[in-house]
Picture 1 (tube, rainbow, N blue to C red):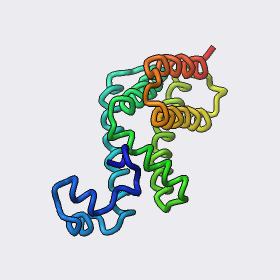
Picture 2 (cartoon, rainbow, N blue to C red):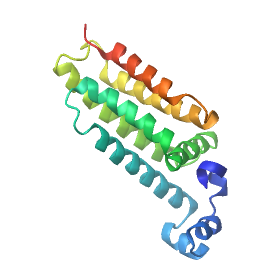
Picture 3 (cartoon, helix red, strand yellow):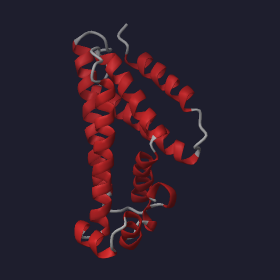
Length: 178
C-alpha cells in the first residue's frame, strides 16, 4: 500500500482493512501513525539487512564484500516492492520534515558504519587505498545506493542490471589500492 499510494494512504483504517483486522487493533498495536511508520521502517531495514548478510556472508575479501554489499542492496530493492516502500516513506519524511527523519538517519548511519568497517578492514589488508577517508567513502557509497533506489521509484523500467554493473565497477575503481 505505501509503495503504491504513499504514507498518507497508510491510515489505521486502511492498514487494518488490508491486514484483515480492525482499525482499533492497529491503533492499539502501534499507538500512533508515527509509531506504525517507525515499526515499518524497522521491519524493512531488518529485512534488507538480513537478506544482504545472507548474500555476502561467504565473501572473504573486504573489497569484494563492499561490492557484493552494494550489488545485493540494489538487487533486493529492484526485486522487492515491499522494500521500495521504505524509500517512498523516506522521501515523504524528508519532504514533510517529519519526525521520522531521525529514524531514517539512524538506519542510514548503520549502513554507513557497516561500509566504513569493511573499508577500514580492506585498508588494513592492503586491498583498499589507505589514503581514502573511510567515513566519507562509506557515506558516498550509501548515498549512491540511496539515489539509485529513489530513481527506481521514478523510473521502474530502469535497466538495473546495467546500473548494478556500473556501480560495481565504479566502487572497484574508487577503492582499489594501486
